[in-house]
Length: 359
Image (cartoon, rainbow, N blue to C red; front, side, top):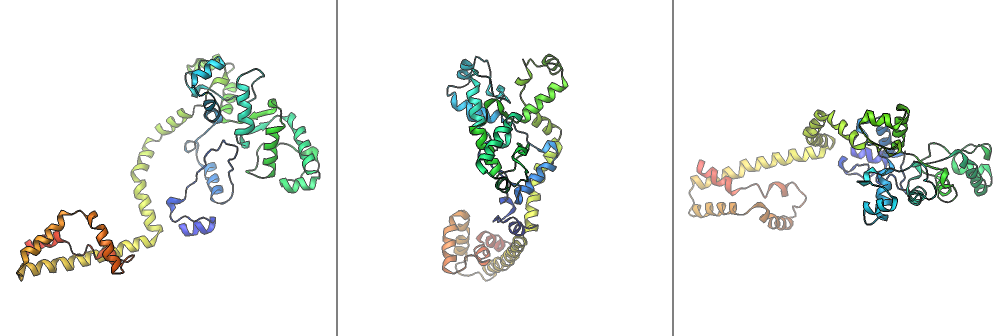
């Protein structure tokens, strides 16, 4: 597929393959919206088919610390430890609770602010008890089941069948209604935060009978499973060490492969390069030898002065001649032509000087 056919297929305007990038920034923020259409959808399929070592697993712990805790505690971690009665040595040790902290816990206010207003709805869940209140909201807002099904793109037979889906669509009225419900109506204890870190901790709970058994096996000293951070850095380290040779080969050959791919994908650049090379060689081997031969064999009266003039061109770098060459080519109406590339370099004083000595 060429970049032109890609643009036509996905309604984009990329001039080259290097401009086609996929940036998913702030994926934990409330206003982030992904897409399953176009080349973003193709990128999602690519991610799903990629092996685990190629993926970057993220969890909301870091987002919670960076977007809520650090801006609030302007004096740094010492201020946080003093207020919460903790002894964390770095922000990385703070984990985000899955459920809302109890009343009186100083973390409760931060947790509710993050869950209700900051975190993306795709990373939130609700307890089963919240479904009745959500059904009531839907019935009061839409009135008729037909209007609800049309708006949500569902096929419920009655309002009592309404459930909170485990997997939400990327966008739409259902997502907006659920976001409104979590932000304004859901009880704090009904909200749950989904994270791969908690899935990892739950896996450890199933593998070890208690935290002491895990500490003994891992050589750690955690007080509970809830304090175990997600080992993202260790994951990256082992993925790197297991594939050092492949990564080294990638960096060695990537630029060459990209250059050849660009040359083969864009036939115009290859054609233009060939024309430029042929014209440059043709003019260089025609004009320079003829001028050098004439100065050597016919011995004109001012030959030494002419040679000195040619040698003076060696004293000026090519950048100095950029503006004069541009103005000259502009007056000759040669801009944006092959002649503008080959004519300024057709006669070279240094080559004429060398060839005169040879003749």
